[in-house]
Image (cartoon, rainbow, N blue to C red; front, side, top):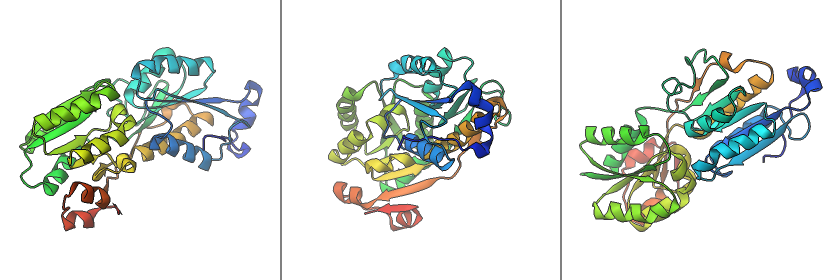
Length: 315
């Protein structure tokens, strides 16, 4: 899929940059090439008319959950001569910005780019940064409410996150759980070897459901997390794009939709617009995916009114 990014001359960009040679678009992800956000970015670039090796070259780097490798991967993109870098996540953004202070960076999936000092204001970011976020501060509490509908009398909630990123989402999950009168047992992963101990802790704490946060390590290890949750017969809710792993429930805004919008913004920059003049975009649409196969595996009955509300029902 990554082959082929070509910008048609109708955009007017080719003539403007011909003397400077083909532009290089860098892509930096904390996860791997299977991320829906990466596929969505590639697909949208293709829709915009890009073909690799003709009037543009694309360089993608994947940390595959090893966040400490991000700075070196970002440096590699700088050495490749990237004209613009597309990143997913705040940790990835700062790894790129630390080694590329002057290169335009377009981000996707950042909780609050203003509070994080990435942009001055959403409508006019300023500097060399713009992007798109799908963050909904109410999503975690709604995920917990969905779990309460599935498990009447739910008291103890397992929360799985990532120790390598800021603790905004774990803090939100703790606050949301308290608001819903639940006890949250939070475990932050440092690597794949932490998965078995995490589920052992959840079992020891008597947790009755799992909330899996949308962070790099849970995305990288998503298939194994679903397998462990199924083995433990622990009803689990994930973010929207984690539905591909087959959890019981997936709910939220789409990371892939944000990455698709990121491609549009990269296109604007390549056509000559300053990144600081491109407004930050927001993905607001919430989607619910129900997996009946997963429900049968863990022997959970889902409320019929919840199934009716689903945007997609699997199985």
